[in-house]
Length: 500
Image (cartoon, rainbow, N blue to C red):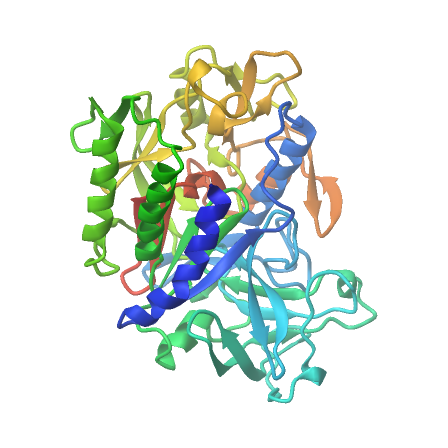
């Protein structure tokens, strides 16, 4: 059914773009390497490496005072997990979300990696056969430039083929080709679209893709949005959202399910009423009618309506907002937690005090023994009903059924897999991060850095020394986006959320 919904959604985006006054570009997304593995038994070594790799991305920036505000800026000389001479945001990495972009005449298909922690739009071409390659020698529309915005990078202009509206227009981008004598030329080719809301993180000082599209009147709004259909497919929209398309698909999917008898017509279900936090029991047919009515009403909304908004705060650079509450099984266990939103982090990361308070509210949970004590275990038959509160609204996160009612894997969507074969305990998807607070290299793990595994016992210590500002800050990663749509507004510097 998920595959059917995704296919229908992609078929609708083009017609919806023509039906509305303001054009919106819709890119289909995929997760390189497939969905994040949540096997029956968790691979703790792999999870630890993924955690270290995620933390390293946040340690590539520092904070400094600029005028009357604090801004984030890239570290120099690859400090904090980066590599000297390379832009932040390496293309072609496994586990990254990407779309596809046609560049040049004739069009050359290039994978476009999304990165919410950087702000540069660049194409990276190497001599390696890995990744997807753009070569200016094969483009008749390539216009070279003598500008060098970064080491081994130029600033040309070439035709970029835009999806949905089927339009091509000349756009500028940093075009980076490392020398054949550099090891960097063995890396994967591809392109990167930085989505951070501040130019302070730009290393090339070149115009962003969104800014160029607005200036050329291709799109009218300085916004972009994300929606994940499942663990390996999604939609990235520029200049608007895919809300109308999703709600249309939801109505059509419900009709199809009803026709094939896939709805359990006689089973009563419990629906949480977000406004008063009370639960009522209603017949499925009545719930289905409400969903359809809500979808029809949303057709008349502009992109600003129907969303719960939060202003960006903290040091300028990332999409950091305030999470007003964390709810576990109907009880508010934490309030007023700063969070950074990042699609490419595979976990929900929480600082030490917060993660302890969170798991203390889940009966039977406890940390795993060292060296994996960043991860917590919980009874597989008792996954929490988790909500994150933004804009006065509770958004469900990684929810599934409990006990015998759940038909999926052990522990539901909140689980990263069982602790071990035959165990009744599962590893939770909320993971402790010690960025900015850990001392003395208390944990020794490996991380993938530029394709190699290196020691990172002092990685969090480096973040503290460099002032990465991640102390007491959560990271809402990939899992949060499932079932929750997000829109990011550059002009108003705010984030909007809604459930689907």
